[in-house]
Image 1 (tube, rainbow over the protein chains, first blue to last red):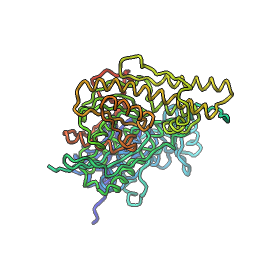
Image 2 (image 1 turned 60 degrees about the horizontal axis):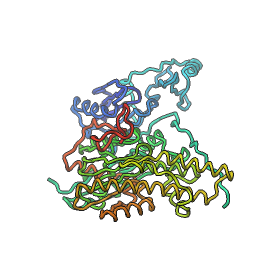
Image 3 (image 1 turned 90 degrees about the horizontal axis):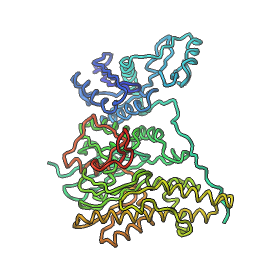
Image 4 (image 1 turned 180 degrees about the horizontal axis):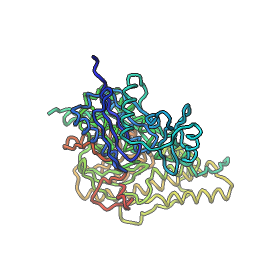
Length: 198
Length: 365
């Protein structure tokens, strides 16, 4: 019998570090620590503790799964950067999984809370986008889908691990953050002077 | 104990994504086996300056590729390394964080030790990498983000003699270029204009020269240039190419004068320590300006001090300096844990009073 793949997945797309270690269909361990800051300091020790508790090492992993957002830009980058570093160091694939995809369930509109009464949604057959909560509710009603933009980070990590297990042998592109919002940047204000011929 | 050390370095504190491999055999000069820099100038062009979020986005998706390229160019694998060095600050926090996390991932996966490096220490130790300079030496760090004098006494032992109380000169060059419709980065474009300009036509202020310290201020110089530009524009409804060249020449001369005069003062303090082989070393992109460099060389010659300027690609942001600074820390026994923090602010000299950003978040540099 072929050994079942060992997948470590983690997510920092909101105020948490969440992780799940999956062997085949079986979740060996899950971790969740809520935090508003300090994910960059905490993520790697948390993952090492998780592996240690399950008597596994980094080299035992077949793939790394990572939540690529949407969500908090800094948290997403922390997780994606770590996943890419691990993939390079282990020479194993890292798979990026969208938080919207990880929230997909029959009869539900996948939604991730965003600041200022907004929400990231992914309507069936459409590209994911950022919209107001009011509009999202309307979309959900129109499509007869439930709208509940909350998810347990542990469920999220587990789902990312499962999707990674299903995909890691076919994925070729490295994980990349899913921002869905352009960087805040204003064009330069200084206008160049009018130049005259000498 | 192995006599040869090979370190990988990662740098992502501003707008350059960089990775490098540096090797040192026993006490022989260290060797840069590879130094890869992915610039981001194009990404920031429309904004007239580095946009932190844009920089962070680019770093996060390029660092591992940059590392793989550096390893390939150096002809080594991760198994050949002794440690991973990474810039842990100061800098734009999003980029620093990406670098630190990527380095932690590589270190965890390979079991290699992790060494966090102060970006400014990277610049300050570069003369040891390139020219094998002995401690203590005087360092003028002059770039787009920094301007300070340091006496370097050891890999983590620096005394700051002074620095800018507002902007860095590189920032002033960039701003000047923007105000005069010249391309970014401002350093090379302003220098090229200045070469055909009259440095005597416009007399710009030399801030803080009246003070007997080693501090700088450049924000007033930018304002003076803006006023002069607007005055000319108001008179002629525009700026001639000669006006522009003369403004650049006047501006550059003012910066060079201030840097030279303050270097004179810093040298006096440093020479009081009677170093056996006195050296002034420069680093940072502004050190590439030939007019500034010429003035600094003159000051050094007058003071029987050797002038050391690393080649440009090791003066501007790069990862070879991070790998090398990491190597010095590593040899001194330094190791960092997986909880290594990325720090937006991290002064090299922790004992001198803060010059910039003395608020809640502490000193910037």
